[in-house]
Image 1 (cartoon, rainbow, N blue to C red):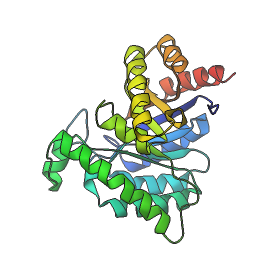
Image 2 (image 1 turned 60 degrees about the horizontal axis):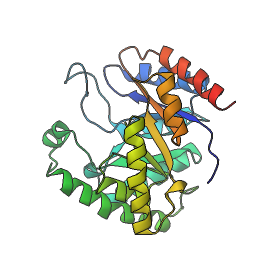
Image 3 (image 1 turned 135 degrees about the horizontal axis):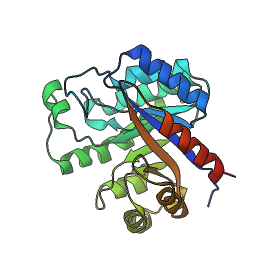
Image 4 (image 1 turned 90 degrees about the vertical axis):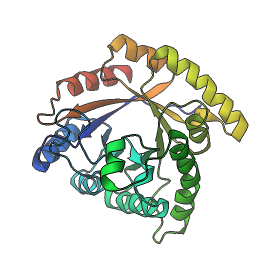
Length: 259
């Protein structure tokens, strides 16, 4: 098993703040030493005023790529339904080049019905959206192999979600990173299911980095998740103020965990 240091990713929700505030927050996060800056792929706020200030994900990620020099970046997570698979691959490859090889392709099947209704996408069922993700990931990977210029590196694929029958099977086939909101007991059970899917598809799932949200967790709970194999911990912050106090606390915890 490959040794992985403990990493901290911060999801900057692109809501309830104007872009200069978001840009300044990203600068502060890089200065604080976080490992990854994420945003999310929605068209409307997920909390607070449902019609409040909000920005689109991918165009912002390109700007973050140009603004930063060290942190990795990506969406937590991109909604597969909103864009053609080959276009997603090309956009990811472009940001990969803009960032000098720091882009993470976070993706999922989508769930926020308002986005679909307001922007004219077919919402369908959970199963249909997951089937579309399973069909599109091979297209994305194939397009990366055809683009000129090629990506600067193997673009890491982060898949978000905890569905045991379909999502974890997709993770076993395609993910470099699996992200969930699991507590310790749930994570232990789902890692066992992921290993079973790995056997089915012929992959050693120990290659997959485990990512878990820690926003509402104690340090003892984070320690438990770390002992179970989590090495990427994510924390969400939101406008209008983007309070960084929790980020500073978890940066210290990460540094102590890494010795």
